[in-house]
Length: 131
Image (cartoon, rainbow, N blue to C red; front, side, top):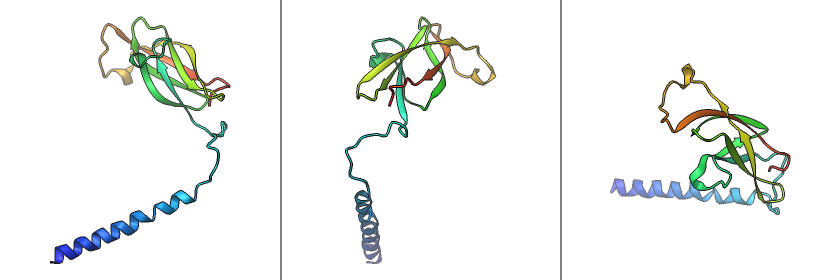
């Protein structure tokens, strides 16, 4: 009997604590849903080919503020990567970046690369029209 009454107390406490979260939704601003481009964080996707297909996705949802350098495991024949980003006008655009070779250092000694892959570095920079 004590366990049953304890369960009711726990369920009641949980009900009270979770029902308070609905008040938080009312505190938000009702607006048009526009994003301030100055304060927005840009998430980009990086692809190994210009078509930007799902099969060629190297890295997804990378946070880029102004610029960011990434070390990627890319196909051996890949000389360029393509960054897909959202523009201010609401469309998606693609920008091309050249890869720089990376020599294996002490910090990159773990892991294995097949003969078809290589390590390369790229510095991604956001264009002016990126959101």
